Length: 432
Image (cartoon, rainbow, N blue to C red; front, side, top):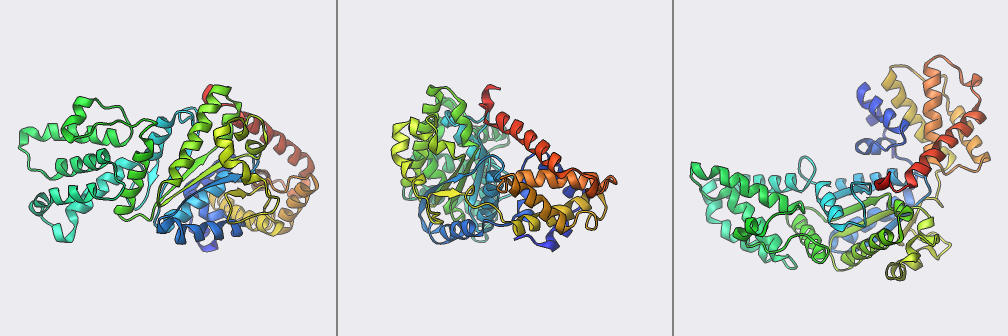
């Protein structure tokens, strides 16, 4: 729910950043809570799962289905914000040329590098640094010599976590020893090099067996052991105070434009992630998809091993808010919700450019935008409403009255622009 007070606290630069991101069709993830309306049923049931199922050791996969412009990325950003508020670690991964879903090791590396939680910054490296700092500052171990005496006990505690991979536990023990074991001044350089080796290993990078042998680490990240690595990461996150891990994978639909061999590899990795979730605890995975992923011959049904797992999710014609499919295309924002969103954007635009748009861009005008969209059969396209409203606000701020604007022509032009964006979006971004 939008808080008027929070919006009014924005500085002009912050407001301008939000407007510029929305103008480009992007979601300003850090500020997403400021302009979130509607979809309350979906969010209510997701919140219930987080609190009473995932946070108690459950695991689940959901698919967020919507057409281009329906607001899938925005909705996933809201989930990210909600999960972090409730104490979960979160990783939001956009599948791009640099992060193709058919290369699982690359996806895992991005997951750990995008990790956020109850620590400053982003990434598993910052998370591990914060954990080591907390060990050093813990009240019962305030002095470094006390920590040194307990290093073996701490290492054993990590190895004894049920389900923890021994390589992962040994790497954590190696970090403890690296941080707290007494070393001479001459050995400081080696300490730094060893710490970098361990951090690089946690990030899924390539490290030589020779470099890892002193820490009793004998495996690198690969598809075969990714399940154990992921489970160990989640168990460690829970061990240090997180309620679990929420994994958000956006723009899955770009896979359909790939060759059959790449699609098959991608769908195999989706199946692998689903399998991982079923054997994990404290894990919720969200994939964003377009409806064609469930309908097209190049979608999930083209890969039997995956289709046999997911074919039932789109069969029911009735909305199931507890189900696997979050169908935001079938639950578009209502006119009053779009107007509420519009009021927020109007305020942000006013702060951004230091003017008062209320008189020129009224609630009635925003209702008219909604009516025009509904007449053209595009009421669900939140992005179209946002783009059109920002254009009207821009022109009004420059002195043009809305009465002088051709709303019909503008909506056609905006939609044409969005169609071009959609074609670009659905192209295989890693082959552009």
